[in-house]
Image 1: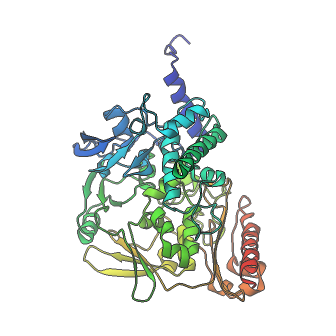
Image 2 (image 1 turned 30 degrees about the vertical axis):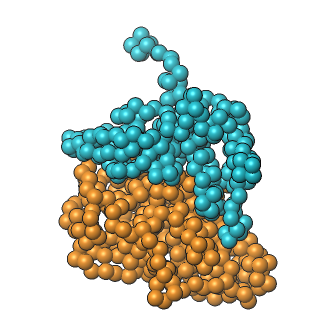
Image 3 (image 1 turned 60 degrees about the vertical axis):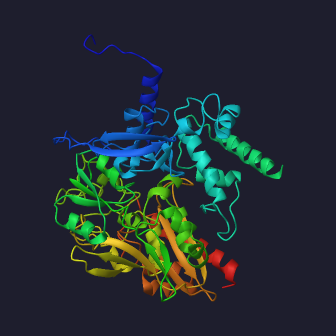
Length: 217
Length: 320
């Protein structure tokens, strides 16, 4: 026992451990590759994109995902790494206004793109209405999936407005509306290990309701 | 992830040449399946040719009153297109039954056709898999095979093609258009695009090295009532155990293809002809010669029931 490393507990460490456990549980058969020989990293490549309205220039190993570029190179750690395989949605960001999994996209493929992360949606002093609604309705417990949930929720309401169809839509010819069933189906790419789903749905419904009221006023 | 070099292609033929002329080179479009597999080193390309600037992002009417869908149109944009929703609803339905909103926003239709199997043994690099490592064997045969194929499989591989969109394309008799490194175009009927595994499961499709998909064309609309019935382990964001794509005409004739059961979208034209006789007759013919495992034998009655549900809806809609 004496040669075990000293166990240092931190909130970050616990959360990282939780995320890894969740992924293992979701994909029992995915194993680590057996110690492959690594080749020398290739030369870095220049890339620039706009993140939350600011032009950012980086020089990156082409393997760098958009998620790692945001977190490790630009230190925008609001966007979270959950499964790193597009299964959990914690890394959801908006690229040119559309939600994607930042973990399944190479940073070098986003030359010139406009990217919005949770840090760009709102600030502690000026919350985005969806952030305020998540707080009001307690749309989280541990909070790890929350930035992805909020980015996805904002995009879902936009997709409904743009009449993007969904699996639960009864008639493809009729405009979709932001019903509970529609929002739940459209949010299925965002997993919440704490199970805050009903509160997330309430938060989204509140934003929809406020928009409807605003449109009528 | 193994290291690789990266370039952005400027035109289709130079993209095809960049991949054809270099061992280990691959195209990348949306990247949602390729990068997932590169992270676990199931895919280990040494060079990526990004095709996003090639301009294959439009949906246009063909002179034959069909639609030509650019290879890089996203799954979301194809499902949302007003003409597709009206005239090819089975295709919109199939797309929105698959993946998540985030993935559909990034995934291209060419990449959707080229996505690789979700067999758990293909993903686990510690396991034998003829598709991942030719000649290493198949751990799925005799292993956990609940999700795997029941027909068209071989002694080398029992994996399925996992997608939804292609099952609808099979019912619609779509054609895959490609170009190769010499600039030669080719039109491949969707029926011939995905291979049966036989003794070469590492080869998913009939594409040759460096052959680039440029578009998918749909023939003129079929009319009829369109259905995509997907049965899965959870209500959303899961691969099909069994899916049914169908276009049913008034009178009960039509076309049907099944997903989640075989190396390719599974359609048997002789079974289509039995649609007026009901689901049992159709699936008996479509799945003649099936070789299910003990784990996945449930897929055969499930296919019949899923088709029954579709035919009941069709009867209610069309009076067939």
